[in-house]
Image 1 (cartoon, one colour):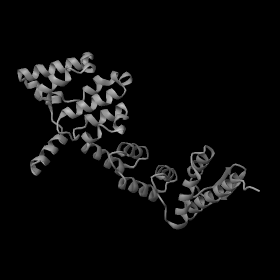
Image 2 (cartoon, helix red, strand yellow; image 1 turned 90 degrees about the vertical axis):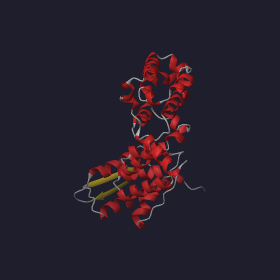
Image 3 (cartoon, helix red, strand yellow; image 1 turned 30 degrees about the vertical axis):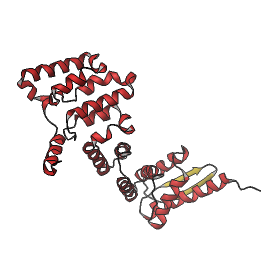
Length: 277
């Protein structure tokens, strides 16, 4: 006769939730009257002066199936032993739950794990995750990582999947590290060309963030004027023609506004001068 796995799961879940509430109980996180229903099983725990949001969070997660049994096991393992196992497979779920249940130590542990496994293939998604869960230090770390390695990241799938607001924020930043503004322009064009039918309408908005006056005139003539997406956009062509006009006339207007070099570019030139590379 086979074993009904659903019954085992109900029992296991109830046991795990009991452990979680025990953790809050002994750590003086109080609840007036908590009743949790998991399928056909019901648990009652009573204590005076409780924060009702803890009860509400768990009820919501369980009833909507937004928490899985493995995440519950890891959290209850922590409540029993003070030790938790975090892996690439569960870190997002554990981070989310630790924030909801105000388990700050686990949240810090998740952030430390993500930082240790940070690289060019996941930096954008980790930054987004850090922003979602208000992990300020991890967010700043990931954002600075992206600014410093921008040129190496513009060909990655994660970069091409950025939202309009995300790419605009990056290319507007004075601390963006690029050898020249050509890299910023080419990054914009790569992003637009990934889905031109949907993104072409955003070209003028992004081009307004590119500091065209810092790009040498020959590159503009050879590359920019021969790019159909740019020449077919009236706003972009207006800016290109203004840039050429100021460059040819050596107009002092070109030394203001978008002619300002980025701090990141200055940093790269400084490092290059020190190393002789």
